[in-house]
Length: 398
Ligand SMILES: *Cc1c(COP(=O)(O)O)cnc(C)c1O
Image (cartoon, rainbow, N blue to C red; front, top):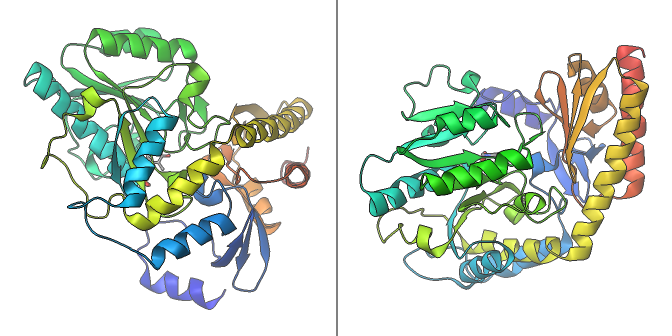
């Protein structure tokens, strides 16, 4: 075990089950540890480094901005923040943008926006939320309260009251959950931490319809699915259903802390001066990088490539599933966000891959999730599937 792991073991909070490796460098789809060993990264910092590590154009933007201006507070305007907001609006359904630093903070802001918007338009009492079982929206109290996985609540209750949970894709349940008290429905178009569970178009259309009917906001948490991950710039484009509010974070600045809440003018106007704020939110360094990220990722030919690579990877995995129907239950996802659900625990397979220096995530005990940098090449897809299949043979003996 190297020095970094050693020191981390002693001095860091123990809230993460970290692998015993410290990375010191990244390049494209590769990470390098203390001893200089190379890893193929199918995690990308949990769907964050969509353009890979140390992307030269992003490094250039960051360096230039670092020599110019780091921080002013939101008492003033800065060029990167204003231009990034403009770009996000041009590329989405939205008309105005609020910036924060992390996913949870964006969710928190969206939840507050929903209450404030209904308060201004319909008075007090419209304060309830609907969220989905198996969802993930972050770890702060508001975000945690709409996260439909009770294991994350343990020891932290009482949470924010007034949240009703509905099963993903349960249309009847969704109808029954709505009432005049609801101010917002929050959901991920494809549940990420829940194990890559896509919502149906039917369910999302109903969500839209019910939100309109009950004058509640439809909030899409695209923190994981956004910024090209699914082969469209935003996952909602697959469904042709626009939310009222969208949360972005993770890949927005390719690894610098930045998140955004995007909404129509008539919704965002509820956030008047003094209603909500963030000291670091929309800082010039992260925003400058994010402008370049969006420029590169929103290119139609780039997105076409993501869809193509996703299709190739998906087809290879489906073939594996056909070969091992007793082992692999389902392969699902969109673009380069893919979940592989097993009938067995995946920990030994995860360990095998790690030993072969291939990094993946296991959001559930029986699910492997793939979220490689979108810039990976076809040879890396082949290599991954080869190792993956070898792992299946070795670990499960089939
Ligand atoms: C990662 C994630 C969050 C939380 O983001 P943080 O930056 O860790 O606070 C929220 N929602 C979704 C869908 C996520 O994937």
